[in-house]
Structure formats: structure tokens, C-alpha cells
Length: 301
Length: 294
Image 1 (spheres, helix red, strand yellow):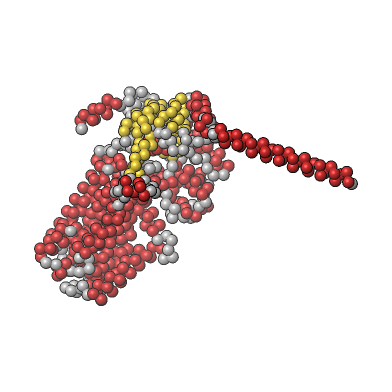
Image 2 (spheres, rainbow over the protein chains, first blue to last red):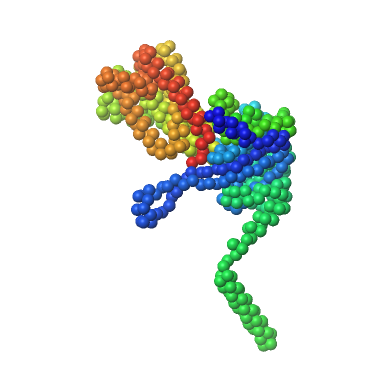
């Protein structure tokens, strides 16, 4: 026991005062049961054992250092491990190997899971704030502000299941952003609701960013990343493909997205070209015929 | 465990400057289980959250029914009716009992309190996987809140139980005050067991299918429907007395039906409760790292 602790102490990152979060060779592995439809042969060879547990390696050895004042975008294709990495950074999914160090508890912006649809908006605001770690006094202090920001004063006593999806999203957002964490993790699609609310929520995110030590943003909207981030991490199949300035990494990423692998095979391309030409020819003939008919009619008159 | 949470705000509601933004240079490893003392402290810090979850659960339980929370009283009454009809009137397991209705009420209600608490507590981690994956808090809050919710909804049933006892000719006695202590002991026991079963169920969800049978066995082994001292031989009775649920039910019956206190049973019930809570706490804490991964 003493030995392992010694090893951990040796691996502790160097103490740079501006460091907020350090990932050292972080691995996260899930265990899930497969649900596959096996053929008869497979059924026999596996002796009737269909539900094999399978390990999903969502994050495979990611390392980086984040400093105060950085706004770090995380990009990558669907299923590349972005959300899992965020959860590991919040300490919610402990790393199976490697480690994440932070100077304070990172907080994922999101509170939806703590809310109960059958309860009124009022009780859910209280529940959400308590879930985020506020005390009873802080709840009372911030309650009005949250309700005002959500713009739901009129329906705050109705059960949340009666809210429209937009109203729900607004309430979630208002609760989640009422706290001010040092290390803030944002997982996509936060600017929600109508144009007015969207504007106010983007404003609020900027305030949070201004006060936070470090902000991580997972997003698929590359323009947003380009606009707000000072640094970009690109995850590809659970590994860090690139880490650098937005210009560099986004250029690489765009190139990768438009890579030749996405081009259809040659035969298909030729076939499509043939079809396109034929459509074009037909259209031209149709137009020509119509033109002729019109001319004839005019001539007849 | 990270001691300070960085989202304290000052009176104006503006964010105070981030805690230790420049000065603090120590990084802590995330996802490590805190020491027992820190864990307890963090749990205490989240007591209001636990209460809010529990109250919310009780409020929303019967929200979709016309009668609403009247069911908290009606449900145990109907249950009593069924058991009394089958075991009191038809089969007649009331040998050796003067006031069978009150006898049955105590047995059925106390048993169901424990059964529901532990079964729901066992599922609490699986049910709240989304919450576990989005917010950091001591996971012990979840089974704790679940047992508290069932404790709250047990209170109306307890009132029905006492009402039945009074209506069938039992008279109030000062020893009835000890029912409060019994409720406390039982709640402590339920919390401890919920901790243990929650960890097991999170690791092996199959436990959900096993638990009902465990409780079915316990139901018969606790003399809910019959007087164990009358139906069971002396050697077997020892096993009944070692059973915490039997000890609690019999203590309750002693208080309400006879106004007597049985030291052995109190000792058994209290001992089991403390043992369950302490063991449960350590068992649960040891698994803290892995919850919500299923």
C-alpha cells in the first residue's frame, strides 16, 4: 500500500501555479453486455452463451495540461470519447488507468438528471440547486434570480412534465448556470430556446467563462469553437489526435473530415455523372419543346 | 475529496473571484474515494439534498392518481383487509393471539417498511445513473434518500397501525413512546441494509430478481402472520430471535399488545441495526469509485 502511494506521489505533476487540470495517460473503459443475434454455428461454438460482457475503451491514454485562463474546445466525430473524457475530468467516471488531477472540483454544466418531471418547477429549482451543492440559504438567495432568468414566473408552480421542451431546456440552463465553478465543463447545445433567450444565455456563458479558471467546451459547431476557444483538443477514437491553436487543429480536422475515404468509389462516381448528364439532357429537351410550342401558338394567333 | 466548493457567491449574487485562483498550486487526484471521515463530512454537507430528494419522491409517488396521497393511508388499510380476510378469517393462523387484527397490523406494516426501503434502496444507484454521471456528490446520498422517502411514507401507515390497535381495544400506555425508538432503530437498520444491497445491485443488477425471494423467505421467517412462539419449536425459535426483522416486529407487538419490553429482542434489534449501518457504510464507501458505470 505504501509503495503504490509512493508511485502516485512521484507521478504528481510539477507544481506550476497556473495549472488547473492535468490529465496523465487517462484511460476509461466501460463494461457492457452485448445483445447480438447469433447464428446457429456461433450458438454451438459459444455453447449457448450469448450475452458476452464486452469492454468498451472509450478513452485511450489522453494526456494534456490545462492552465488558468484557457478556453479549451474538444472536437471529434460522434463516439470518439469526448463526453466520456469530460466525465472523467469531472471525476464522475474514474479513470481505469492513468489519472486526472485538478486544483478544484470541475463541474459539468448540466443538471437535467437531478430534476423530477412530476414535481413543480419551484421544487425542481430547489432540487437542482441543492444537487449542485448549494446550501438551503443559498437556494433561497438565488431562487428568484434563477426563475427570472428562465422567464417562467407564470408557470413555476406547474409540474415540470407539463412544460414544453423549450421551457424545460430554459429551466435546466438557468439552474445549471447559477453556480460559478473554477473549472467549467460544457457539453454541447447549451444555447437553447427562442432568439431572445439564446442571446441572454450566450451572454451568461461568456460571464461564466470570464470568471472561471479554465473552461472546456465540447461542440460540433466548429465556428463556435473557432470564435470562443484559445486551444483545441481533437479526439479520434479515444485518442488525442491533435492539441494546439484553433486555427491549426480545425484546419487538420476539416481536412480529415473531407478526407478521400468519404469519396464514393470510382464506379459510383462515373454512374452518378452519367445520370446527371442524362437528367440535364432531358431537361434541355423539355425546355426546347415547350419553347417550340409557345412559338407555334404565337404564330397561329 | 476536494474540501472547498468553488461556487460560493457573495451577497449581491455576483460570483466571487474564484477560490484560490492564483495562489493554490496543489492539484488533487480526481475520482479517488475520500477517507471515511471526509466522506461522512461530505455526506453531512449534502443532507438537505437528501431530504429534498426524499420529499420529492413522496410527493410525486401518487401524483398521477385521483386520490393522491390518500393512498399512503388507503394502501396499508387495504393490505390489512386482505391479510385479515385470508389469515384471520379463512385460514385462521390466530392461535394464541387475543387481538389478531392489531397483531397483524404491526407485523405487516413494520415488515413492509423494511422490505420497501431495502428493495428501493437497492435499485437507487441504477435508477439514478444519469444523476451519478452528471454531478459529483457522495453517492451514499441516494440509498439514504430512498430510505428516508419510505420512512416518510411509513408515517401514515404507522398512524393507521396505531388507530387499528386503539380501535380494537388496546389502551394507550407510556411504553408506546418507545415506538419512536423502534422506528429509529428500524430506519437505521434499513439504511445500513440499503447501503449493502445498493452496492451489490449496482455491481450485479441480477440482484433485483433475487431480493424478492429473500424477502418472501424473510416474511415467513419473521412470523408476520402467526405467533412464532406458538407455532415453532424452541430450538427453531432461536433462529427467529436472531432475525432482526422478527426482533423488530416482536418488539413492536410487545409494546402495543402487551405493554411489555423484551430485553433480548431489543438487544437483537439494536445490535443488528448498528451492525448493519456500520458495515453498510464501509461496504458502500469502498465501492464509491465504480458506481454508475453499468
